[in-house]
Length: 126
Image (tube, rainbow, N blue to C red; front, side, top):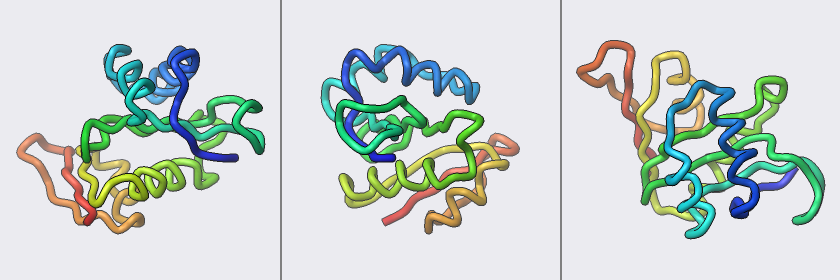
């Protein structure tokens, strides 16, 4: 597996992964991220031309808009690798997320706090 910027022709595959995780994000946001380097993909295979999209992360500046991994590939460190790759591109990151993924972000060193909306959290890592 390797992490790289998504290519424009991979936007449908990225949307498939995000939709499979029941994340709501506009295709325009993902497409813009493929163009400006802020949509990252985890690919199966060992080089730039081989593989399938296993996971994706979409940034808006320093904010993680979405991160998702194919259901059958969860628990294999792919989401962690995507967030670590994003950290390598930004000085700090923020995210908003549901309570069930709070342990994921905390394991990655994010400081978390509850939002006013019950069951929702904000995290930041500097």
